Amino acid sequence: VTMDETLALVESYMAAPRLHQIATVNPEFVMAAQTDDEFRRVLEAADLCLPDGVGLLYAARRYGRRLPERVPGSELVYRLAERAAERGWPLFLLGAAPGVAEAAAAILTARYPGLRVAGCYAGTPAVAENEALVARINASGAALLYVAYGAPQQDKWIARNRDALTTVRVAIGVGGSLDFVTGRA
Ligand code: UDP
Image (cartoon, rainbow, N blue to C red; front, side):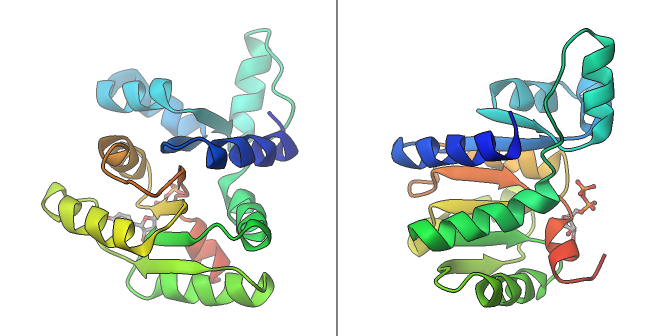
C-alpha cells in the first residue's frame, strides 16, 4: 500500500470495533523474525505490515514483487496525528524516555490544532507493568495508540494486549519516531 492507502485503511480500521495492529517493517525486522518465532508470528498476524525501510522495496523486487513506495513510521506518526485531529480520534503516546512522549504530544498538538491527546506515558514493555499500562490506556479512551519501545518489544507488546485494550482501534509500533519528532534523534 501507499501512504494514502494506509490512511484510508486506518479510516476503515477505526470503524471496526477491535484493535488493528500495524507494524513498520524494516530489514532488521525481517532478519530478527528469521530466528525469533514469537516476533515472526506477531508480524504474520498483524493487520498491516508497512515497508518502513527501502531495503524492503529492494528485497520485494528481487523476489518479483513490487511494493509501490516506502511508508515510513517516522512520517506516518505525523500523517495519522493530522487525521486524528480531523476525525477526533484520541491519541495515546506510550514509550520512549520519560518526558519524550509529552514533548512529542505538545509538538503534534501545536502542529495539528484540535488533536486530542488522551495520554502520554513512558512506562516499560516489562510484563510486570503490563496490567497497569493497559488500565491507564483503557481509562484514557484512546482510539489511536503509538507504542515507542523499539522492535520487537513494541510489536510483541501490542500483540499481547490486543484483546485487553478495549478502546484502541489502531495500534502502531513507532520505534524511535517520538525521538525524531522531538529532535532528540
Ligand atoms: N524504548 C523505551 N523503553 C524500552 C526500550 C526502548 O521507551 O524499554 C524507546 C527508546 O527510548 C526509543 C524507542 O524505544 O524511543 C526505540 O527506538 P529505536 O530507535 O531503538 O527503535 P527503532 O526505530 O530502531 O525500532
